[in-house]
Image (tube, rainbow, N blue to C red; front, side):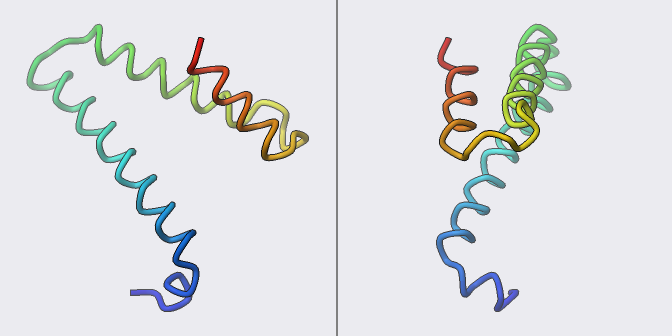
Length: 78
């Protein structure tokens, strides 16, 4: 394991949680696309990915972290 990363336990924990979320999302896409063949669900998942990506990029880094977090939450709470 990378000892440099281990010296930042909060950041490492956050990265591991993010990877877990991404893996769950990929598994949902695979399950619904290949096993259940529910393309409506896959389309909805892809739309959520696009919305998430845009919400994180909007403002080109000009917003504070707090402002950016509000933009992201607004995108998914509506």
